[in-house]
Image (cartoon, rainbow, N blue to C red; front, side):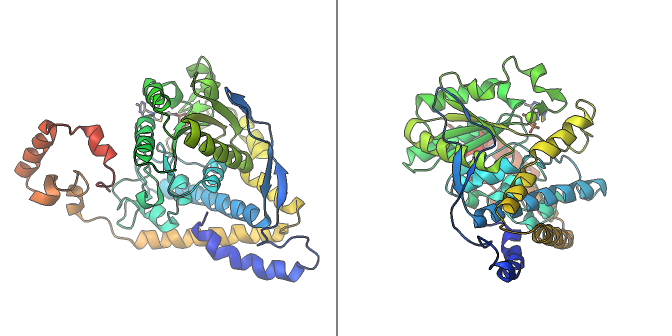
Length: 412
Ligand SMILES: Cc1ncc(C[n+]2csc(CCOP(=O)(O)OP(=O)(O)O)c2C)c(N)n1
Ligand SMILES: [Mg+2]
């Protein structure tokens, strides 16, 4: 994965590692094989799980460390910007869940598609989005990835295979299955990862979409990010069976430690191979969000502080990788601290730039609303025109709202 900080901070490690290379077994940019074991075994439903053993390298370990550190820093900075009222409206943070985004990205290509819910900032970064585009979008500025018109919940990067960023719980799953249908229809050897939460996992539309995906052997991978809460509701209060990897019944599933980036990578690689040959599969990622549901939720009324600090101490995805790097003598604690310091700087620079970005022009209210060739973009912004086009779209044969949404290459 090529996140912006990764490029910037490579230079930090090089001189340091060169200086100590004679005493190091492996240098920081080495691609030599290191074999690690996932923290926990996988549990399969209607499928034999993959091996716990996975090959990595010093280079990959450091990339994982840097990428997850950048995501964490971005989310912590977003928290401060929100409190300073520079970000308004909804804002859902991903800190704690970084291993899911990073591990998934390490197993796939940008031709594979990802679609997710509103907790989308870090998924966008993983798909090649920049910090500037992220902060500008969060602050409603022109340089944002959705030109400042989407905000926190609606990040997109179609050229990186990222189809958003959706606010209606569960609605992205049928859209993801539609993307998988398009991949199969055009005979592409790629898959779609449709991500959703444990709260969404009980919705009917998910099962309807899964039924179609299974009937037509679509390359759809349903990724349930089980962070154990839907807003303030614990999973056991909302789900009769919280074993989400089994909920596909006739569709195989895998339970994965979503706090272990290597387990996520291994599971996603396995799922991609499976989906291309056999059709859909469910991956349940056992993960945790440190922040509350959104910025209006302190996150401490429906769970104990001990629970949160326990996860931080025992299962934190960044700390797990830090320990591996130190154990394999790939970098020193001081070097890792340097990376964190540099990441903080890069994030601060992106925020400063984003603040300079202008607000979108009011005329932007009329762009990216309708499919090209219809609507006010073509016919002007007079209200009478808008009404005419709106009624035309409603009555046009075969054109439905979902149809418009699926034609996302025509949209933003
Ligand atoms: C159809 C619908 N119902 C309710 C909501 C309000 N809502 C927003 S987020 C959320 C909880 C979803 O939890 P989960 O799927 O576990 O995702 P997480 O926030 O934990 O990532 C709810 C009920 C919504 N946005 N859409
Ligand atoms: Mg949840």
